[in-house]
Every structure is written in C-alpha cells, then in structure tokens.
View 1: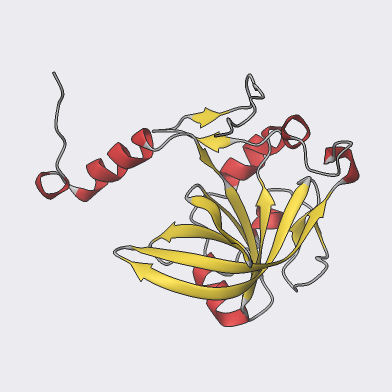
View 2: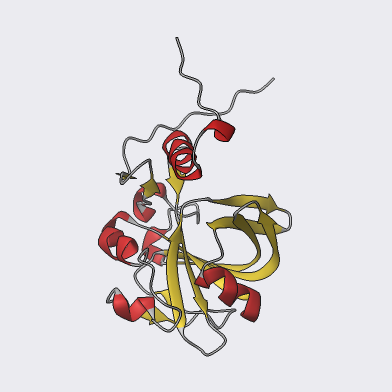
Length: 196
C-alpha cells in the first residue's frame, strides 16, 4: 500500500521537503560569484548537474532569486567549486542567509584564489572548480535554472588519477539528502556498461 502525496493538496513547504527527501543523493554546486560592487558571494546549491557535453554546459537551480543569481546576471560569470567532505562545516556555514554586502568567504573563514578565466574567485581548498560564463537564466516556477558554459575545469593535481581524470575518492564529494541530512562518500563499485 502506498501513500499518495499530491502537490495541489499540500502546502509548498511540505512538498519542497517531499521532493528533497525523494531526489537523493544530490551533488552540491558550491557557487562563487562576485557582486557588481566586487563583494564575493559563496553559497551551496544541491540542484546541480551537467546539461550538455558538446558544448560543455553545467546547470544549477536556485529556489527563489538569491544573491548568486543576481550576481551572475550582473557579471555573466561564476564558479562551481566541488563541495568536499573535508569542508563540510564551511559549506554548511555558507548556506546562511547573509545579506549581499557580506563576503561569505570571510564569514566562513575560507581563502579564495584567482580563477583562470573569470573574475569570481575559486575556493582555494576545493580540489576542483568549474569556471563558467553565463549561458542563460530560466525562471521555472519559484526557481531559477542557471546554465553556464564551461570555460575550464581547474583540478588540484592530487585529485587526478593516472588516466588524467578526477578521482571520486580524491574529490570526496558531499551530497545533500533530505531534511538536515548530508551524504558522505561511501562504497564505490566499478561495473562495465553492457554491449549489445
């Protein structure tokens, strides 16, 4: 027997929780951007994935229009820093609703570093950063889908495996689950795709 949960018969806050507890685990885009006044912003977004590989495009969704979306609209660029288990507390700290005049790097005690292709700083301790130029911001209900053309991927050499690709174990990415739960790297299995 199943309980059927209907969005039109639930309050929006409850159904938000239904969705975030159902679509798990979710990778985290730790988005850094600059305001038009030069103030750095850093915030985690757990609605994040790849939109296209040719050309390379990544996407994240902001539920409501937050500082990141405003900054990206104004400057046309941003960085997605991989959120790692080692930075768990700082990632959570940057999810607070700071005003646009607050630099979340400073508030969370994090060092930034210059990016290769954009003005927004990278998180110095994040092992991988995806530098992006804004492709499009699409309003969807109460969300804003942000699409970014990938300009470069900057990877710490310690996070690369022998084949030149980033390694899951070396990145140790966090995931968001439901409620206040976070997912940490666990068991990994390799399995070849079947051929027909």
